[in-house]
Length: 72
Image (cartoon, rainbow, N blue to C red; front, side, top):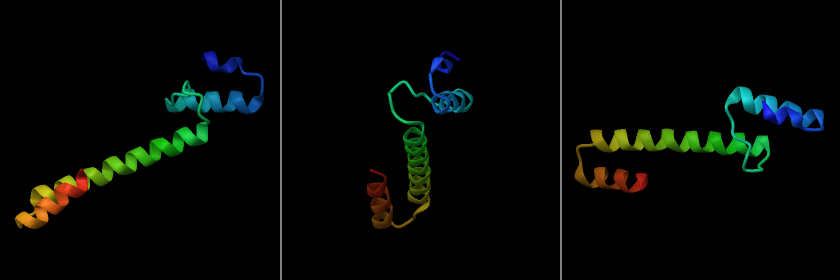
């Protein structure tokens, strides 16, 4: 818990949350920004997985190609 050496209580609180949540704050970004980016990344991974599954299950070649292009 090296991050607990911060001077303000807000910074200490953010470092505790980051430590418990396994969030890396070494990039100098704010905790809220880091969490928002992580959420966005997870949503995109889920959307890609859904599109890939649809593409694999699609029987029509043209529609299958369109779904594969959306994944790219």
